[in-house]
Length: 606
Ligand code: ADP
Ligand code: MG
Image (cartoon, rainbow, N blue to C red):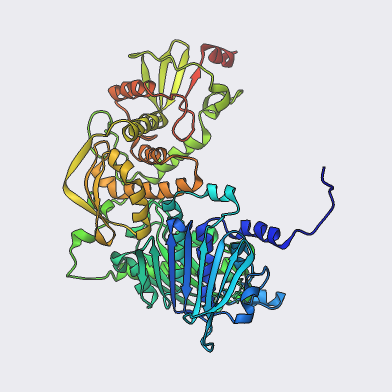
């Protein structure tokens, strides 16, 4: 047995441990290298990746370069040129300051650096593997620095195996790239993946940068925000409420030009949009906050996307009122452009709608089993709340007080013993109460239907192709580059589901056919939701691609709490549900039904 003596860890082990915090995946390396390039005062930064960054990440800049005698030092832990003393932490103007990134990256990869300062005639090349210097020589080099990181995690197989597919890693990289590119519109960026140009961004202002990153259609969606106060200088753009999306992904806060996440400030933006968005829609925003660095703590998170403000409440109020103001101005003065084809820029969700009534009421005659009339495009707030209420409370609390049903003690129970044609009725527009030999079944109509739809779609993706319905007029949908990447990943599954589409130039998707189960009016949002859920779900890593897509689809097309079901629809739902492979749990792991036995009722009565 080894002796348990306290010892200082060798430097390279300490670096490997630190690397675990700094470098989670290729995208983390991209972030650190690009931030260093910005800090070095570059105005052209080039990013090259191969195989999702797993085999190569290269960042080349035209910044200051690193002095020859400091090159080795730069790769040591706590080596930084950006702060000198603890007090400096409160005056940070640079992206980096921890002096950890290069040491961490070099500990877990093969790194090569070429660098030259403007005043030097020759440059310097160093090669470091696993933290050890392997080569150092003079070389011809451009002014600036170029870091190549190869074989990431080559010495930590567990980490390497944990990486996702190239496509998924590339998406994470793209997100980091976008955050930095949006924060620095004055810097030119180029981004190549496997030899293809993904982004070529000329220097310019924020508006131009947004258009280059998010697509040409972005210009007409933007509303400027501008506010100068003692506490904060606020600037940037928000997207018009019409372009709000069900998925998150276009929400960006930059504090002193650094991308940050702030649920609190997000809430302030949402509050400003109050009354302008249907439930569960998120507005896009790209907001820059300049605050005194002394009143800001950027140090609370190792990867630094979270911040703490001293004047949080004031910021909240300023943000909210500035955005309200901008929205108000936009509404009294809508942009008039007579050359515009109105069909092209009507958000799809409004096309089939009556403009006077933004919130549609529940269509009580809707019967998912009998006709193909589209469901209401949006349901009222009350309905959504009613739905979540049921989801949250579960049935146990509604019906059986003493013994709450848990998923575990139900798993071994036999199948529901409903027999076709038995009497049933709909209760509270939420449940089907069914007479069965062993008791009364209370079936959640929405969850049961979700299960049916889920298994149907899952079946089409894995077994046979689903029925597809050709559209008379193809839908032209615009997406961001990042969304397009995700679409390419799920293309095959979507086609198996009955989607028929072509990915065109300029981030345009032409949809020619859709699964016959889906109403056409909802397709644009649905595709967005599919992309968003897929991206989120794949990062969480718990689901397969097919499962993720089927989950999204079943959630959006299944009947809901509050929908009235005709007698035949009730019977149809029950028999389809009983034919499912799994009858106990919904695709979201909620109980679909409970049984109340005669004994339960008897107990209550005594
Ligand atoms: P930090 O950015 O926190 O200072 P890093 O480990 O990222 O720590 O970098 C260490 C030092 O190396 C920096 O402080 C900087 O002086 C130098 N450096 C890193 N990248 C570059 C670059 N692209 N151009 C010029 N200097 C750089
Ligand atoms: Mg750094």
